[in-house]
Length: 335
Image (cartoon, rainbow, N blue to C red; front, top):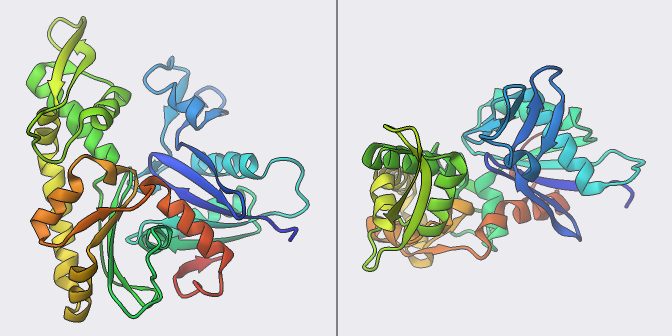
């Protein structure tokens, strides 16, 4: 096989690249640093993320994807080219086949933009597949069976909810609630309650280290550094996991509402299957403490987090790309 294949989970916060037989070869932030003067790409991925909030006026470090879709076409193309070249390396005789996972609620214009960006980034052929399908494949759910399986994939920009049967999506929903929104809500809450302005990476750190979807019997604590809003000087305060639970209330209500809506739209036979098997959660943001328990309490259906939730979409996209014939019904568009 001279033609290489590359599967990409093009996320709002992270890009994961899966190469058949090698597994996941890249897991880096979807951030690009650009020079304002000549619009040249200076850094991509982890190196560019370190620059967020620390750049001079002449450099912009930005995320080219917003809510799971392309916000800046040129930058996305440069980022894709960088990751494809990094994954395959060396001199290549043939251009690779690329499959990209995208949100289920994506419009035809947004689909076209992803395909064009992949082709211009050096792909020989580009395929697009819906995230809930590949998240289910990557979570080892037998999506081809005549039985209902429910998946919630919570990424950086969107939460994708779907009930899948016979390889297709029967009912689905997509809300623009994810890790980035959680970070913003925590930063906003700390500013409002404690009068402390914190950066993007600090609020993400708070979410990971002490974030919880439900109030805990023994709250976790951590010190948070930022800028005092009144004095304008550096300041450190201690916050608890209860602060994060309060900060995330509104976002979590929106997520639960979307899950209930998909369950309402699901045919009775498939609802019974979901009740039996439970709901599977994937995506990096599904790791928020007690989120599975919150969803189980709100819906009355058992909820489980998949093994390696962050990798499910990338692994599933890789499997779909290796078995194109089996999954051709799930592929949305190709070129």
